Image (tube, rainbow, N blue to C red; front, side, top):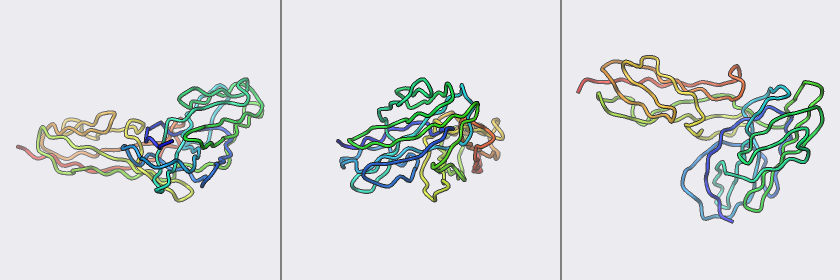
Length: 223
């Protein structure tokens, strides 16, 4: 089976023990948008969050590696070993229900990876999965004329040393001066008037207190 580079929001706040079949278990983030023709050699499950309450939901991310060494987040098939404890949707969103243990498994391209959810009382703990440790934001162009557009990109670095470009649709984008330039949910910056603004990207769902942020300055010039 070939590796198709889909994107999915990255987060988990459960007790996770990442296991892979046929390769490394180190998580990463989206790195490409074009499909690969290579065979999938490994799959891993990763997280950007470390806390969750019973009754809460979080989205797991499956990252595949191919025979060329390329990594990308993919649309895997998901299942739970104990849906009464923790259920998982087709999109990888895990909802914790009651105390107990459940193994959430992702399958893609003949490979699989699992995350273990452990719930004791109202406490859900996380172990074994790398979290986002920093975020860097860059722009395709930092100097624009009024009416022009550019795109901003967020690159996450994880606690295990891996890094990769984050899907812009799961980053929270803000402009410090929207009268100068606005930024869309997908990371498109539009120049409005001459001046300077700072574009901030934040990533770390579902707990905002655990989000990492990065910035880039954009200068808009009169036409």
